[in-house]
Length: 183
Image (cartoon, rainbow, N blue to C red):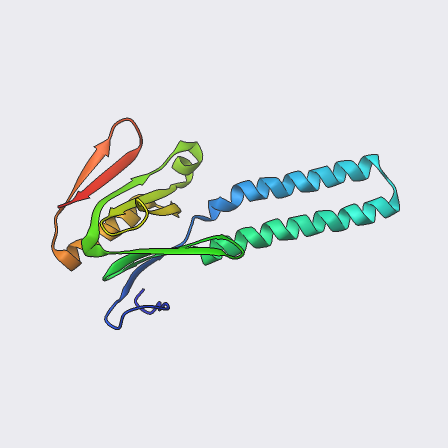
């Protein structure tokens, strides 16, 4: 994966893993699209006025295209990177709202992943939380990533290679959650 390059990449920095959110994040927007289309069909059935049908079809089309394009744009623009030196989180929250957080591997104090609910459990996606010293926010969060355990282990492996620290894994019994504390 070292052929992947990004703006701000250091000369000797290699990309280990590029992570995007699971495609299952399209599930709820997909339900909204189905609901909008169902409402259109219901209105069309009850109000069979040709003028109303045309304008309501155009409004429905605009709403559906907006929901699909915005969801895809946010999904495509949101990326998480694990490199040989750091972890980066580029979060797209809307058309014009983006934030980027990063932490050096040697500053990572704590990593855990969580898989909540039946949908995330069945389709193996969840969140990876990284607590690091020097991060403005409380923690970096990789949200809705596929196979969060493997992502967590890749971060631990990269951190071990960079610093030589040994990680210990703690498993929580009340949630399906594993925690890794780096020493």
